[in-house]
Amino acid sequence: MTVATRDAVVTDFSLTTGLSATKRPLRRHVADMADMYADADAARVLAEQGTLVYEFFDMGVPHGSGEVAYGTSITYPGKVGDEYFMTKGHFHEVLETSEIYYCLSGRGLMLMENPEGHVQWEEFTPGTAVYVPARYAHRSINTSPDEPLVTFFAFPGHAGHDYGTIETKGFRKIVVERDGQPAVLDNPRWQEDV
Image (cartoon, rainbow, N blue to C red):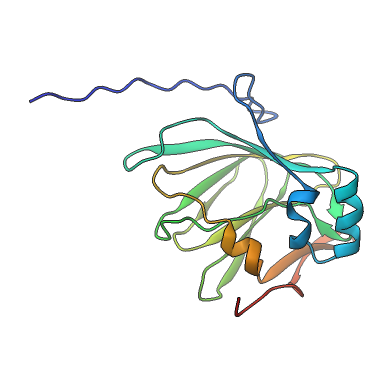
């Protein structure tokens, strides 16, 4: 019997900044997500300024069954109106797959919801991991006024990403600043029957 061999994959990234010296980041600006924020006027202004919200590094591991995809995500501090900067968020194409995020630095929240409408959120602080259960869409939200939220993530290589559902419907909740603290509120732009 012949056993297939595979080459190991070696990647680099900073445990402080999440940045890689050898990988190219994928970047998302306010213009890429303006329709996701509740304050359309504030989003339009920041979009025109070319404001960077987050970037992430896919470490290039093959995407397939039996593989583990991983990378880093850096969500910068800032707000659109009173809503904190966030990642676009996604479901997995293979809905029954999970993901784990480990906070390297900064602070924030992981907002999660399943198709049936159950919403939950967990806090990110350095040294904490958030396990995102199967069937849950998820997005990272930076609640720090001045520090990037840097996370390491890993998920099954065959899981894929479904950004379209979130782009169309949004999340049921948003995270805004109230009296200097994060508050989770109903999203006025959420589309139930889209």
